[in-house]
Image 1 (cartoon, rainbow, N blue to C red):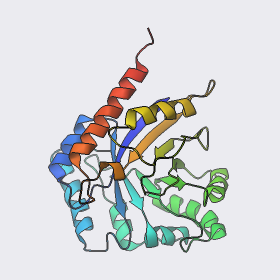
Image 2 (cartoon, rainbow, N blue to C red):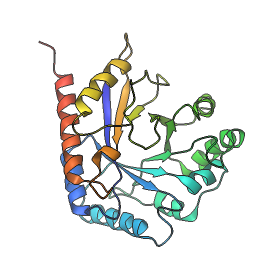
Image 3 (cartoon, rainbow, N blue to C red):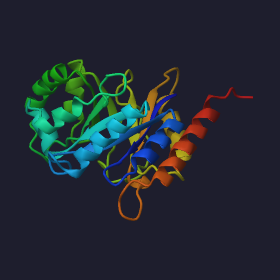
Length: 256
């Protein structure tokens, strides 16, 4: 198994930028996932300002960072209808110190049947939107949208696939399934914490390396990294990254 990212989701306007930058510099596998939507981050709101401050700090300090934008609610509905919200477009145009897009990956959190997303329309519009945005997508996969995601795969949409049956609720699944698409980067979320990340990586490694297949995977935690106020705890994030990195180092060591 190849572990490509250890994603820390949930940094926001309550997260210390310098502390976050130091954390992600320490752990090269680390990636941040910032949640945005028309309700969470309206134009001129605190989260938008914080994201701009983060990007400015990283550019001024010449600090690289892996970052994904996790798009929710009305903004992801608009994308599935073929529209890009102006504030979302502003975020996607942010660049890093190399003048490359700051957000390399864009996660689309849609659930067929619970939001205003029609499968036939999204099947047509998302490839067009990807061509316009020129950005790699992450599609959050569960039972309610797996048929649409399979159709998008057949259209050669460029995406990574994230298993999260609880859709951000942090529920630990009973098992870690075989990747949905053998040739794609497969993400695993749901119930990950600093304490269980090593044992869950054991399960993921077994699922992703059946037979001769060597899967490329990443993991994504949010709920298990929150403090008592529901915001990202840098201390918990450090323990999660440290334990995942140690597990992967041991995994890669030649067996004696």
